[in-house]
Image (tube, rainbow, N blue to C red; front, side, top):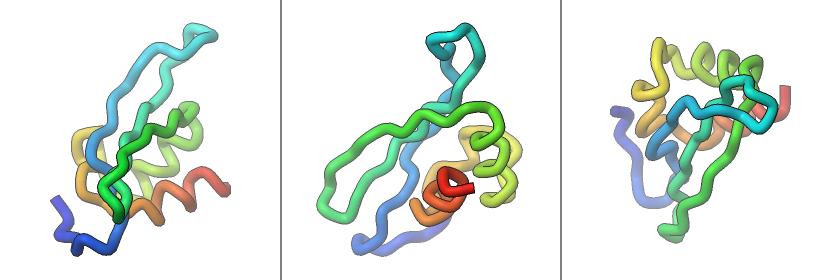
Length: 76
C-alpha cells in the first residue's frame, strides 16, 4: 500500500464486475480528502491503463494509490 496523507484522495478498492453489455469492467472506489467515497467504472482499456500506470498486476494492488493516476487513465 502506498502511504498517503489525509489531504490526498486515494483508491481504496478495485474489483472486476460484469458490465451492462456483458463485458468485464473495473469498479474503482476512491476516498476523497473530506472522507466521502465514490466509485468509478472503467472499461477494459482504461482499466489496463490504470493498472500499468500504477505498476499493478491485479486490482488489489491499486489500493492506496493516488487518485491522480485514476484521473490520468480516464483522460487518455
